[in-house]
Length: 151
Image: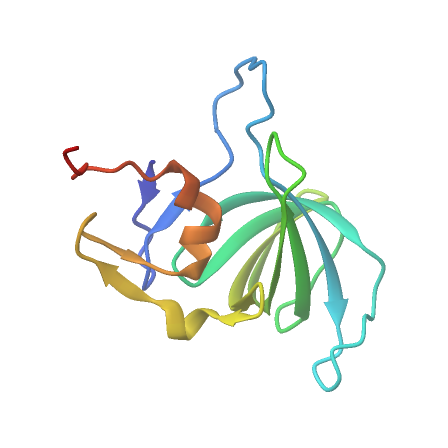
């Protein structure tokens, strides 16, 4: 798992490969997002499609053709490659970068599957990294048992 050190509070982990390689399986992580009202969480937009670029302990970055703004409250449904599994996330857009006609958005996540992200951040002694519900949701299935029990 490659991580990026980009002068932010938390490491970023790449979820979108930079190299163009032909795979037999989809390795990109797609998501849908909707802009919502901060007051009552009602949807203010239709669903927009995006591709996750990276993820951190408390947030994620995605790119989309659809315009989004700093401060927008968003509901996100992440679709994991090779499975029908989806995960619901909620957060606030903290920054936007326009690249041609595409938008990169950094989202600070508040909840993952209804669990508060801030309450889940901890240091994983076994793997010696900062961990959270966000990373567990995205990468948890890829953890290896480095201290297998002897039977």
